[in-house]
Image (cartoon, rainbow, N blue to C red; front, side, top):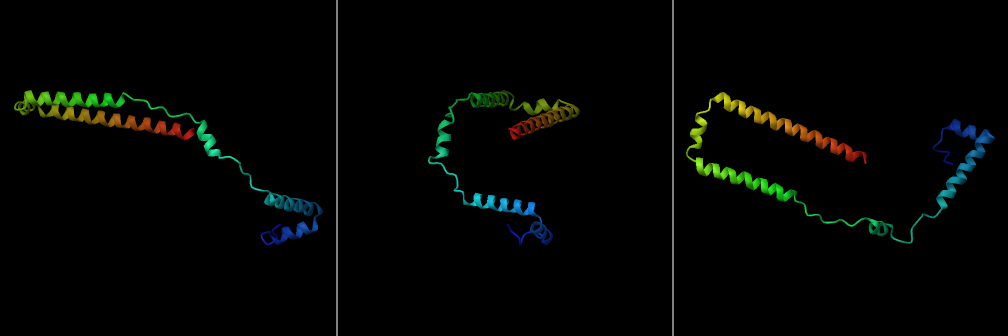
Length: 134
């Protein structure tokens, strides 16, 4: 054992106590036996064996992107039609609305946007929490 790393009182106790002396000798023998054991090694490549057993990823053509692009196209299309037909009269359309209605509309839109962002963030946090447990 490492007498230099031990407290002097412990070394004196081990030298005077037969039970502790026997246990220290057994411990020393155990540590020496572990040091002389050969390192375990495989005669095959474990990584290749594990990778071969993993399921092959299947390419799945998702319609999510197509749907997203379709929605963007519809929005741009309808905005283009509105500006085409109401181009000159669009400004006159908003002049007739009282400022309080415009302020309430903008406030409502901002509140909805903030609420939706908070909800999306909470869902993201819940998904991350689920991923961290597995």
